[in-house]
Picture 1 (cartoon, one colour):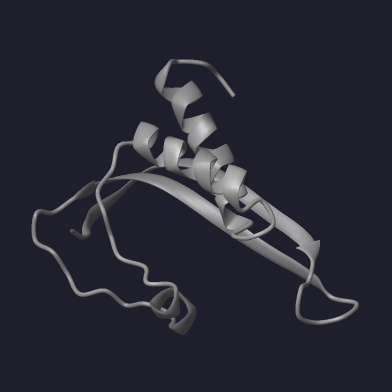
Picture 2: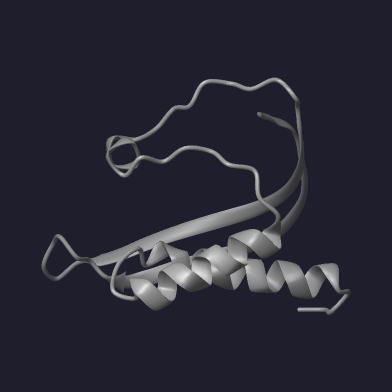
Length: 103
């Protein structure tokens, strides 16, 4: 399924850490999150090489299912997939937002 239209801005996550591949370098990544609607029509995947190597494939899940899976991954592989920590933090903020808690 493809995004139909960009909605309201939800939030921003900034990840900054020592680069794992280049000495004396800082890795920085900014992720922006928006609410959107999706179309029923499925589109083709456009994966990066590393995503293809890891076997990425889309699955529609609820935010709660995503959170539960992420927490399991963090318990099993805390040293790997550090992006899961970032996405789990964003999901926590989403739950608070949906409950009406101001951030």
